[in-house]
Structure formats: C-alpha cells, structure tokens
Image (cartoon, rainbow over all chains, first blue to last red):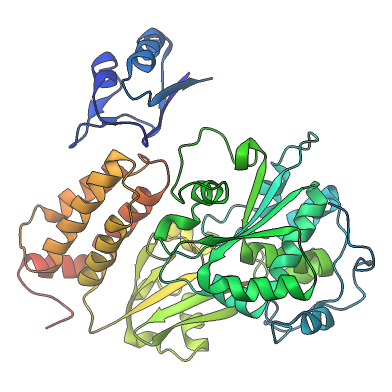
Length: 66
Length: 407
C-alpha cells in the first residue's frame, strides 16, 4: 500500500506525522517528509495507522492506493 | 472524427525534405506552400501510427522527453473518445521554438493534431498557446477551413504549460498544476483520456506519418534520431531558434552558429529547470543519452551560454528569484522552500561569506525535491544544485570574498 500526499491540500497541520512517526518527519515549515516524496510506501504493520491518518487529516490531503 | 475526403493519399507521393531544415521546409506559413512542400494529409490508423512512431524513436519535445509512441499507446483503446491537446504554451523565458513553429509552420502542427485525432478516434482537438501565437494559428485554421480544433490562450506564466495546468485551463479553470494520482492518458480533460503533446512533437509526427520512420532517422544519431528545434541565447545574443540534427555535441552546435566555445564559461542546458554545465563538459552530445551522465537533460531544447566575464552564481540567483516568484503557491514545500533557496544563493552570490551556505542550499534542494504537485520544486532545486557544481571554484572564491568573473 502507498499513501499519496496531495500537496495542494496539505497545510502542514502535522497530524499524519504524529500518527506515522516511523515514516514521516516534519520539514522546516511543518510539512511531512517521508521517503518517496509524494508517494509514501506503507508497510503492512502501519496500514491501520495510515488509514487513521487519511481519515483524520483536517485538509483531506491523504489518499491510500494499491 | 472522419478523415478529410480528398486530402488523403498513400504515403510517399512527395519525398520528404532532404536537408536539415525539415519543420520549416515549406519556407512560409501559408497553406499553399505547406501543401506543396509536404503533400496531402496522410491517413493513419492507431496501430500504424504507433508502429511508425516506435520505429522513428521520436521523443516528446516539451521537456520531459517521453517516447511519443508510448504516450500515444497509453491512451486506452476502450471505445471512449479521447481528447488531444497540442501544447504550445511556452512560459519558459529561454524558449522561443514553439512560437517560431506556430508562426512559421502552423499547418504542420495542425496536421499532427488531426492525424493523432483521427488515428485515436478523438472527438475533441485543442490547441493551447500564448496570446502572440493565436493570430497565426487562427489564420492557418481559416485558410484550410478547419473548424474542429478549439484554440485556447495560455497565460505567460512559467508553469502555464505544465500538463495538468493545461488541462485545467482548457476545462475553464485556473492554469495552475493539479494534484494527480492517474495519468492524463487515462483520466484528463473532464475525466476523458487525454493525449497532450508539445506542438513540436506533433509537427514531427505529421512528417513521420508522411515520410516514414526511416526518413526521420536519416538525420541525427541512433539514440537521438531526427532533427530538433533549439533556442540559443546568452553571451552571443539571441534568443534565436535553430533546427539542428539531434545528438550534435554542444560545442559543435555553438560553432555551427558562429559562437566560439572559448568565449563560453558555462552553459545552462534544458532551461530554467535545467542544469549548468562547465566549459569542459560542453563536448557532450545534446541528447537524452549524451547529457544523462552529466545529470542534465535537453528539456525543451534550450541552451544559454554564459560569457567568461559574467558571474554564474549571480545569474543563478536571478533565475532562482524568478522561479520562486513563479510558484503557484499551492504546495507548502514549494511556497516556502523556493524563496529560501533563492535567498541563500543570492547571499552566496552577493558577498555573504558564511561557509555553511553551500551545504544549506544542497539540504533545501534535496528537501523540496519530489514534494509538489508538479516538478517546479524539483527543477528549481536541480538548477541550484548544478550551479554549486559547475561554478564550484567560484563558490570557493565567493566564500573568500572574491568572484572569479569580476576579478
């Protein structure tokens, strides 16, 4: 599974960074940084946290694929 | 779309242009000259067009250099009618080739659009170009009584030609990039499969459809076949547009138009999203394969030379400032990161001797890369990083309070 970040929606609220600290860190301005840029690979053990991040993102900037 | 009765014929009745001047072989922009030089519109079905393009090796001329046959064949053949877009938006300040093409050979672009449309069963044909190109396009369409192509004005912004920005503009939205999770060839203009090609790509497609892949490959090199349009500017003047065989060495391109390579300190290839090459790297072929080892790309066929009396870091700072201002300000890393990178390079260029500047520029360039809805942050980061490489010794000089160009 991978998580797509829609940067045109992302506001850097940082909820996803708190829910997925194994995958995401905060950049200089508060936006999420992870390996893959806009397409973050989600390992199986973090899929449920990724679903939470998608559902709870206040700007609906996250989507999950494949 | 139905083929034009009376304007179709078997290929080969008129021989293809024999010289290096192919796209401009008609001499003038009118339909009579076009028809005399190239003959009638050929009839191509989907399979034969894809096959001919595959054998020709034609790649996209808008910047990304994606294989033309591959993009065309990724349009689903599922009965839906795709939209075809000829992209002539040229927001890149260093590129003038699409304007030159639309002013001097608009019928070849129109041909390419009609051939692609007919072969894919398109019902919608669009041409998108800057305001100054709309008159020659409208004149050409009127001359041949062609009413199936809708023409749209592109604004003069840097990112107006980015594929999703084009689709957004044609659909009546703002000409800024959109987030996408699917290719435009699957879901583009109003959700329809959309094939978007640069106008030069379509003009070559029109010639390849008539004269065949073998004719196309009779110029250029094995991995960079055919001719291409380049825009040259810099210390020797310009911008000027030339049609040259693909894969020529950069130094040979300069020599062929009367520029002494010894007067050139460095060259920016690929445009504002491109890469600075130092003088000793300019023997590389101007092609995808030739430039790849140097981390560079042809982009939209742009070469800007820098004379030995100019400071490359100052030139880069100016461009980065422009690129930062051209951000659509939709994506956080771009909105925040590009002005930060531009400001660091400006400090390095204009007297700040803080030894941490190069490292910080590299860090931010890496940080913004891959983190936008379009490649604007990536291209801007590439330019900044390449300046630190190409002007490496000048970076050291600047950190000691001097400048190699101005000594």
